[in-house]
Image (cartoon, rainbow, N blue to C red; front, side, top):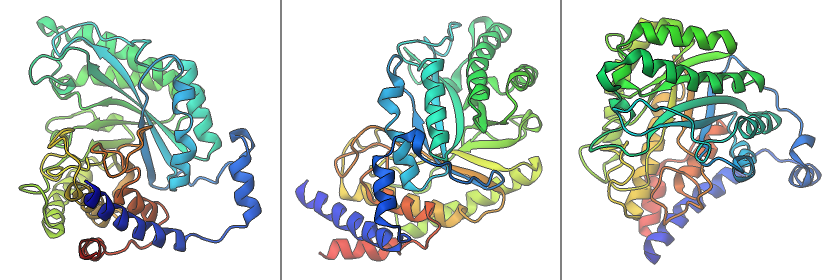
Length: 380
């Protein structure tokens, strides 16, 4: 592991040094003032609200004390250069066939704590997106939220519970000035219930006046499958496509697959005629991430090749999507309290080559050629 760690640190360090050298010079007094001031003393950054959302996702796990636990992530996201933060909050039901969707106060932040995090993000000049999602406490084999079907197909009862769940966070988002609310995420089996979704979106608009979107699964966004896109301001989707046939792919293979996939997505975007937002862009730092981007534990092992694969996936996405006019937002998954670094196998870019690439991207500066940097690392 020591040799692997050294190679990753060399590569990340070279990119980090290039990023640091490209930063605009600031006075030492200004840097010191920012480092020592309290959040309420910091000036609001000007925000171009018509511009592309560029941000990081933060999942809010845990109930009591959520504000104190997660507040430190807000200045970190701002320091990365992001202009947006997406807060994920959770509702729970027992399994995909149960009818007990609810908010668990031990697993979901209080309205007060979520509001304080939204306010703090605003102080740091970040645009705010709130995304409620449904998780399963005791999923049966192969179950996840995309397979939810209520008992006896009682969709009216399920949507009544779901609507209460979403309206809770819609009110918090409205009261604290969040710029966007995601009304649902990857609820594949529910998506055919167009009437229920239209009623839910109308109820949300009654209490929330900001932008609305829905986050579709990467393989289930087409208008033949979702017929309520016209009710929303943005069309959202995740990005966990198969981008390679196996682990340790070449960058050219990933690029070629994105070009093919991009053509299909843009045809869809022209059909709905609304801006696209990628609500989850990210890959684990594991070998095989390019093949199964949705798989948290593809190998469950930290390797230099896994970190390199994650970095190549970041680089390819940036190359293929950054300047696309149809894209109204890109949210990277995810920024966490974990320390990250070479031994980490999760989605977070913290302390990895992927973080250095993100800093270039957020700063709108040319990124180094990753293949050259990687070769330099291997040659050391």
